[in-house]
Image (cartoon, rainbow, N blue to C red; front, side):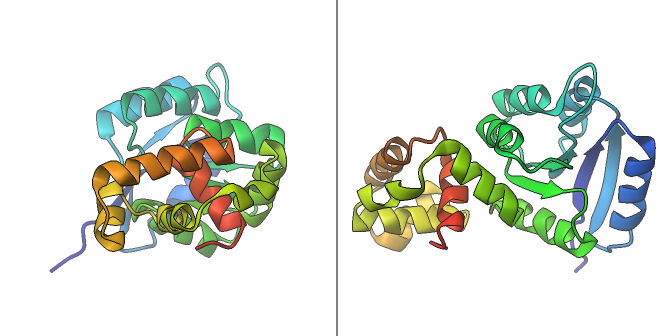
Length: 210
């Protein structure tokens, strides 16, 4: 049986970058580029039209930038899998991207194999962040020491979150009720001072809790 290809939308304001990414990605038998966008507004429209498996999104585009695009797409499609593909790795860029809902953050200087690995991770429900980006995120959110505030059960739940597990998966694996899982997740987000599961998962990975 043939494998269903991973459908990718590229968004970057430089045509040469888009063409280079398309040429490389489509060498892979399990990957297909279904569209290209030159700015955030176009990326938003094409995402709604094409519903790709993954959006590779440049953060610096005009007139609508990547962060605004991220926020709009995630508001309409909370399960959207979006990877920020950028040249910047400081907290002022990483934190807003994660807060907007990015499932991955990869540098344009990354090895192509690492980019493919990130795409496959994100499709499987996990997160994929450049190590320097994870460090910038932790520094930007100031929560390195907050791991000590979690209970043992909350740590177990956090580890499973970092592996891309859903609440239902966590409930089955830990033999607890779905309502209990939701309560643990809410407590984890509050204690780590993060806004959503993606930020919590990135924090867990940065702390080596996977």
